Structure formats: C-alpha cells, structure tokens
View 1 (cartoon, rainbow over the protein chains, first blue to last red):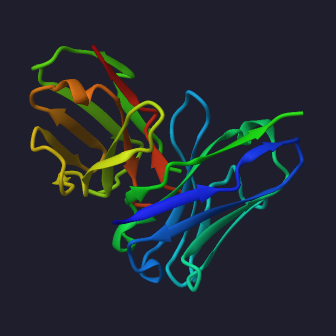
View 2: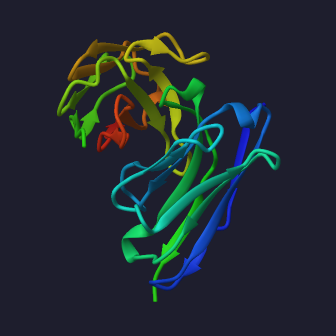
Length: 119
Length: 106
C-alpha cells in the first residue's frame, strides 16, 4: 500500500524557517518524481515544487522561488521541503504527492502538514 | 503561466442528478489535464487523468472529456458520497496550475 506521511509543520514567525519531510513507503520511491502542493485554509490548491526521481530536474512556483528548496534522499525514501523567509501568505497545509510515471499528475497524496506563519 | 478557470464555483444539485463541471485553460494543454476530488479535512483524490482516463477504483459514473483549452467533468448520477470540491489541474507545462475549485453541494 502506498503511503506518504508528512511531518515538520508548525507555528513559525515571519522570516523564520522550517523543514518539511515526507516519508514514503509501499512503492519504489527512487523511480518516481514527487511534488509538494499547498492549500491555504479554506482556499484552493497551489502547486509548489516538483523533483524528478534522480533529482536532475527541479521546478518551483514563482511564489516560492528563491525561498523554498525541494530535495530527496532515495536511500531514506524521503522527500523534503526547506522553507525559508516565511511570510503570512505561506500559511497552508502542505501535501506531498507522487507523480505517476513522470507524467505530471499526482496519483497519491499524503495527509498534509500545517504550516502557520504568525507573530 | 497557464491559467485554469473552473465554472461554476459552486453547484447545487441533488442525488441522482447529472452534473457537469467545466475547466478552461488560458492556452492549450493538449490532453494533459487531471481532475481531483477533495472532501473536507482530506487530501485530494485523483479521479481522471489525460483528460478522459478514469483512475483505477473510481466509479464509472465519473467521466472526463475535452482537449486543447476546454474540458469537462461529468457525474452521470450523483451519489451522496460525491458532494465535495473538485479541482482540475494542467500538467502540460510548468508551473503546474489548478483551477480554483468547484464546490458541489446539496
């Protein structure tokens, strides 16, 4: 059974940093591209970043470019999102999601981790 | 960036109704479009990919169609479990973009 479990969210002050993690199981993690998608409370979905299976290709939304860094450790079956210079508008549930066959659509999602940016 | 616009934003319907949600792209995404269902407090679930391919395990009352810039998600006969929010997503070009969502309510 495919499982994605996010962790690392919490309350952080503006300008602060967090590192989100996503632990994957039930599939060959090293064969799949992965994404982070976020959802502000009560609002819609926003794609944040994607990384290819071997970390060769990395993409970011303009809204996070230069502040967020996606990475992965295939030996640990883990995906990460380092988020720096946090702003109030980064407050959201952050989901990690598997991209099927490098296609671009996301077939499995984690339960999400909440990041709250507030002073 | 490709803008995705869904209509309507809210749809009121009843069990047994046939409903259609439209998703329009600001430029062609060919057929690289997915549909997701999200229930309150839960992560999204994949329903449709490549505009019209039904994900394994998704009931056949769900169907997708379209290409280029106009796409539709149709539910042929609404069931109580279908009341949720639906999102389209283009994956033709980075940055990937989602529609703003359509809330299907009773």
